[in-house]
Image 1 (cartoon, rainbow, N blue to C red):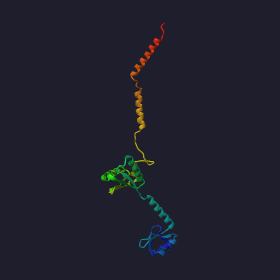
Image 2 (cartoon, rainbow, N blue to C red; image 1 turned 60 degrees about the vertical axis):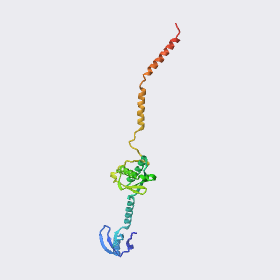
Image 3 (tube, one colour; image 1 turned 30 degrees about the horizontal axis):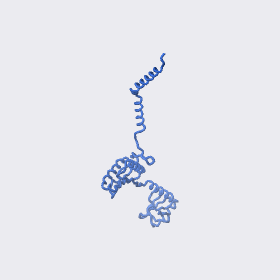
Image 4 (cartoon, rainbow, N blue to C red; image 1 turned 90 degrees about the vertical axis):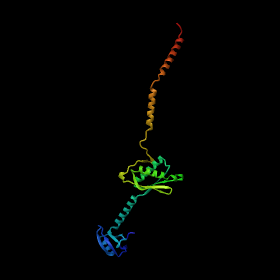
Length: 231
């Protein structure tokens, strides 16, 4: 609790004026009289010092400034996020998890990566280190290693810290929680190419077709000739 004016209990205080100038050590009554003479308050800003340090300022403004600073610190405070893996985590899930990790890092949060072992996986804990080293390599454009991979019981964990904002470059982009794949081949284009090839081959005439047509015409002519009455 901040003490002001006549609530200051110390018999002597070190006084600083509103401009930061030292006024020296004096009794608390004398310091309060100086503050009241200029229409300001005497505020104890370092009660643990010997003697306590007091400043002659506007307490209302001082309180507002302190609240604003506290709010700014709480916003900028780094929070720890966590992403969990398994030895058998598939490629799709791996990409999604790293996309989320990049989002955390982009928000200036540290990220703790945990890989848990179950059952027979405990006999192959080296696979956990392989996975975490892969994560370090895949996120090297977003983070640096704050705490290297360490084995603890049935899990291996590490902590990555975000790089400065101007050095970050994302590789695992998320869209509505899903990974956006990049540079995938267009299946429709491939299908169209196959269809074009089929059309070209079908447009080439078959050598047997004209012969079959000639035989049909000859048969029709013969039938007409037989049906025509003799003159």
